[in-house]
Image (cartoon, rainbow, N blue to C red; front, top):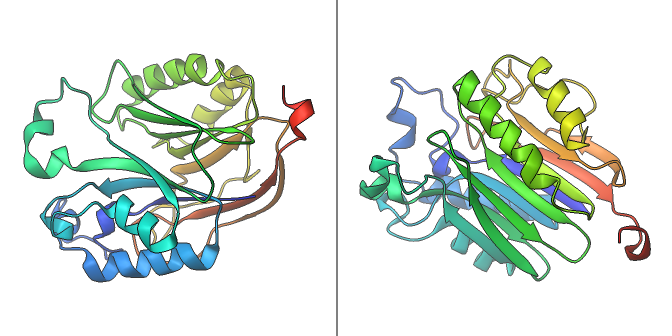
Length: 247
């Protein structure tokens, strides 16, 4: 199977911003078509997308997740990424900001969890035929991120099936933040070594990760050099154990 992880920056492109918010306000039609074409070329079975527009002016009121899924003939799962207590969620543009999965095969179950702390709180959990998959976008604040990681350990350990935990972890202090989480959650890093993913025009930090349980075997891991966003995508080819072994 193939997993693609990509923070697409709401389809606003991969140019270096001139001001902090300038990169997030553009309309997205041309870039989203390019992103969709890239996703098609990767031919992934599971696509985890971060910073997805659910229907603001940026894409003429249309859901980017639904558009990509429809174009590829796949299923999708989308949810806004802010908890109900976040006041800016009621601002039209912020209310349409979320994360999404695009998957080739049928989704058996989906759950939307929210961390207790932070602005970006969403965890999407999908139950697929052969595994469970979790998608996250963690806080920038170290203390808040630590709390979220502690909650994520408890959440993901509820699954007794092969599982992938992926997303933009915002590990601004580097891989030392990751070591304890991998041990506590019983996971491995699919990349196996540091792979800078941000910013796409001059990657210096690894913010994006694909993590997995030891019963999943990784055959290939790549970081395509595409600049449709300010993040680089990750692509992981993997194998799950036979169904009888994963029960």
